[in-house]
Image (tube, rainbow, N blue to C red; front, side, top):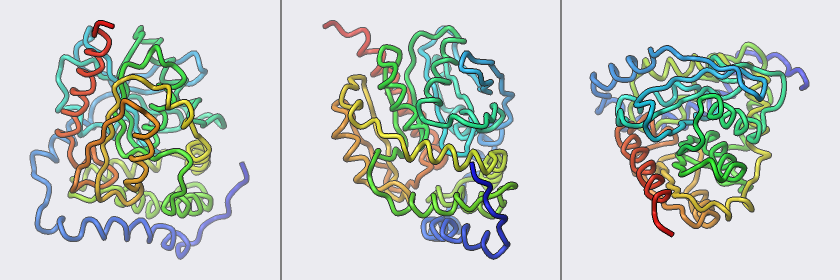
Length: 321
């Protein structure tokens, strides 16, 4: 990949500014009057402090992951978005039923997982997730994906239809639809060099929320973004933008539920309409006050949705034909 030119402080500021403006538009009216409850901040930080495990996979990479719940319970895999890590789902984990077997990996190039020099397509990431399930002895699972992770979930459901029992897609982008916010973001990412500027990572993460989230957690997620080298920001984003499983989505028959925040600065409602049109089993729920990071803003509600889609998936498997 070509080496990007170094960024001056002025350029860094100009790249982060649109992301900061998106955050400001959505947060200004609520943050001052409605700070997040102290107990929520404690929940976030306690969950983030979990110790991750790691597995060397048949795909040649080592992924870190956290696991919780009943080892004999229904498996559910949670997949994060671009430059996040397993910690993206830390707010949700305390609210999930202990009866579930929950697996939360950091995708290749992210968090404490391996950062290979190439191969950042959604197919590559889906193959890693399937290899992790194989390594853990799990023949099937329900999959939950946020943003880029939702696209990986779509790839799992289309590439491995016998292995995926249900899908929950959070803030999912529809493939192949034009998106001005993504175009602008791609242009900005193309200019990144190492080390990735803190201001850019901060603008990116703060731009994903529309409701108050504990500042300590946002700082944690900025740190996770800064673990990702500039070349992986570019390669993973390129792999995401090039991916188009639309034709294959029409073959998906497992229970599928979409959650979209009405104040999402990145994903428009039309994307949800397009995905529902492609997946005949898909249903949609709108969180009226939420932005792009719906699972950070309303973790208990998302946890209930996860438990519900697992129940639906289990019921579909056992239903008589």
